[in-house]
Length: 204
Ligand code: IMP
Image (tube, rainbow, N blue to C red; front, side, top):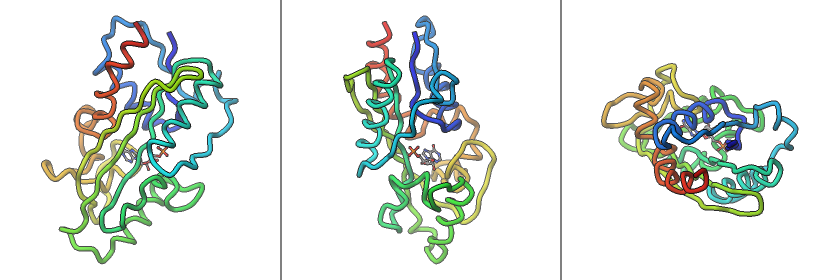
């Protein structure tokens, strides 16, 4: 059976593949596809105009399920920085502008936090996973992961803000941690773990 991950973001696709292997028994014969797959490249860009992670996740999941007529998992996620009153939040992917790169977003974030001392650089990632079938929102699941924003980029793994997001327990950025370590503690892993029983119910 096909399940579509409603994203073009290769970082998210990689992590979702890992999480499926981690939380869903391999006995199920699932073909995990994304919007980068040839069959779905014609799907129009979904405008993320909701005012919360949950609203955007629901919109991405339900519209994609209606277009593809398949079960869809959508992830809306982002970084919430306390000293910036929650920025970049739902604008995380386009913080530095409409066609922003990960590097551009990080540069803007570090600039804005330039004069903020270490103890006040607290932040967390949020991930809301929405699951939908055609004409049917099945459920939403939220996960969070807490840490600090560093003053320089460190590490080559992961994507997005990973090179500046430091977990206080290890002192390492998400980009310095091996993939399997990030994928056990991340906001996405926590949301996926909550979603896994529901996903299993629909693929049995
Ligand atoms: P979305 O596609 O609107 O959900 O945008 C998510 C954005 O949040 C990404 O483009 C990243 O900038 C950021 N983000 C979400 N999850 C992560 C993560 O696990 N690591 C680093 N950045 C993330």
